[in-house]
Length: 518
Image: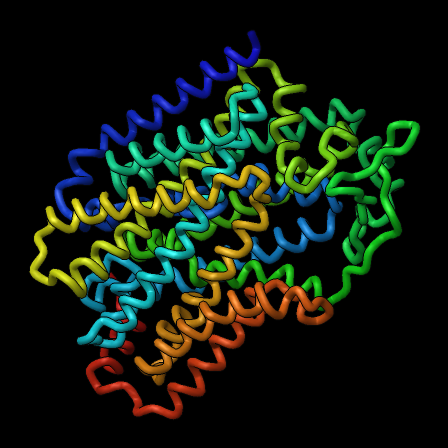
């Protein structure tokens, strides 16, 4: 009976989300600018909250608590610190300049279009490369969201993973078709509120159930390295599962090393923000330049509360249900375990709606941005330059279906670890677009050739480091974002200095963007 009530609450929530899509459908489908960027009409609260909700996804409620549950504080904590710093710095130094520059550079409405207009391209090479990378990495990102939905409903109701994963994908597709960027941003604002409330309620309830904060800490201190900032817990594993003692306690080995280099590598998650299209588009879409300061404060506070609540939930979950999850993949269900076991049915339904909210708010962003990049920048930019607005909209929806289908194929592996999938796509965007975005906004000497080389270098290095170098271990075991980001920066500087400086028109536009005030 309780599961049925949880399902009813979640269905009511989904109906409300679809209602938002229907409300904005007419306005969103008037033209491509409204559909892809909302007509640059976002207020400070919607811009901030939708940016963070679309960025965090189900990873916040499942992936990050899962890491804390399985290996303790350090990995999850330093990741959260890196993300919080990245959030603040991105809103502090990138937001205002990008908002101004995107208007001056041909009123750009997508990230690839901004890069192309910034360097006054005629042959659209930068735009094409950027759009293709967005297509690849957002397909991977979308798959992580579909995995989240599949795991959620499989855990709650016992319905086969693949059926619920596909059903979740269909829901997101229909929703994104309806309302575009405006509906996505408005619902993301509401979903950010649901997410943070769910995190706080589950955390407080879990602490009470486990006997209070003191009891939680006493319990976890017995696990070697579990509460250490400079060590990591090492579950004793056999055939992919953590072993349990005869007395029913989870078994851990000696504390693993977690040195300065590992901390820097983990904190480098924050570098990813400079290249995240779903966040950068909010900077471009806000209605007034001077409202970005308020948005920065809202986004930073939301991020701080949500990240550290998510980490704490993983720790409390280990104290409350120490042997419930015996693999890293299963550990990502700890939020669900706490919610369904400890909360009243209606509140549990709202908490599950929080996971659904996080997933929807991200997956619709990923699908919309990827389809807009391909339709606006590849279809119209290269193949059919005289395409009408209507044709671009139709193309975007066809591409959305293609991306969704590919994401579903990737998500068919129900053993996928959400944290791992997201970390790779995050590194991809961070290294491909992050350095180029910073140099485009703040270094006048950046050349078109440097931009192309930097994008290709960063994107390729992510794959090379992850698949070839990282398995060797040692210093090469760094998170691939950090070396790929630095490599891209180096390439941009070297190639820009070796090529002819930008033409006068580009340099004048750079100065205009720097001094621009609405």
